[in-house]
Image 1 (cartoon, one colour):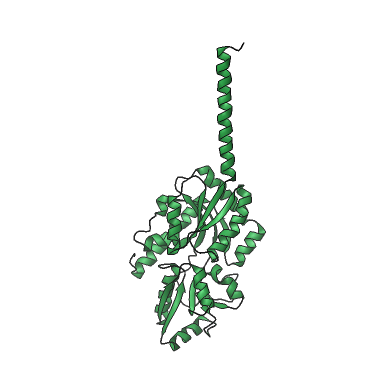
Image 2: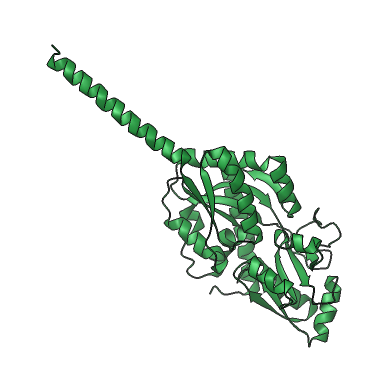
Length: 327
């Protein structure tokens, strides 16, 4: 016969095994579950293409399906709010560039999120520069020719920007001031619809990131005539910087990074960051991102957080000096 003590021991062992099995099942589910990678702009734009390039490789590194979820609108504000509302369980991340994280909170009265409190930096993977491009419907092949063309149009011109109150919009204002032109920024819901109008000659020029323009520039459908940053871009060696054209002050280049909801487990963040570092080291990924005009380089969580803070400080000064009022 089995004693009562033995029965208690057996029951305890059974319960322990059962609990262990449940824990292992939970871990397996977390490892093989779906991870959402939020993007604040429409499908087809530069940020979306970058996200899908990484997601395809991250799936293998993480052992989980990584899907890109476009939450387009308001310059990334909708996606940022979705990240804030997401559970901090390692299933939701946000791939964003500087505008949404560092600038949008400075130019919007109620953005609905505070990056310093609501998000945690996971990994940076690239920096990039913005560029000024003209559509095929204009005769210009350089910045000076564009300026001359606008003067033949009554000194007025509309310039597309992928989001309101963004670096591109501030650049449009400064270009107008420098050349004494009445240039009006025309905000879009991302670079893809802006590019569609440029290709259809519905608007004469646009400002966006080099990745937004590079393929159509190479195809001769639009022409990038100037870039920001302290040096010419390897992908566009014949295109001058704005500093060369006499418009200095935009040498601090923006960044791309991945963020998670505040409170996300440290182990989850470190695991995702390590996966990003491995993915961007892959020759095919690096080559594709470089061809899009990005300067690829891994930034661990602390470095990305520092980059975010420094860029925010830079744009706090620029925005204050411009007299822009948060809307």
